[in-house]
Amino acid sequence: MGLFENIVTIWKLSRTPDLGPSNLAQAPLPPRRFREDPARIKAGILEARGIDALYVGVDRAACDACGACAVVCPDQAMEMTAAGPEVDHQNCSACGACCSVCAREALEMVEE
Image (tube, rainbow, N blue to C red; front, side, top):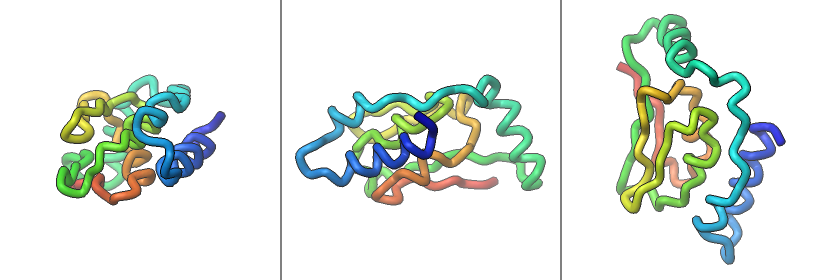
């Protein structure tokens, strides 16, 4: 199953009233095929954009801790807590997959 199919699955699960975060955690993880070195990928993105830093920002007030972002992260750089996702910025390649699946728009890519 590819990344797109995983995103669609998460989207469907997040909109089904009888399925909650516990079922999202059982969804299959996307493959790490192209994510062996997140730091190298992130460095390429930074260089191409001409910026010093790019990271995932979390709006804790908007987050409902559904876990969809952690499930689709190809770098496995997100860990869910009661307060919402905790991002491991060392392993995050800043691909934006987590931001694209957030139904509450609680995640965004922040440039510095």
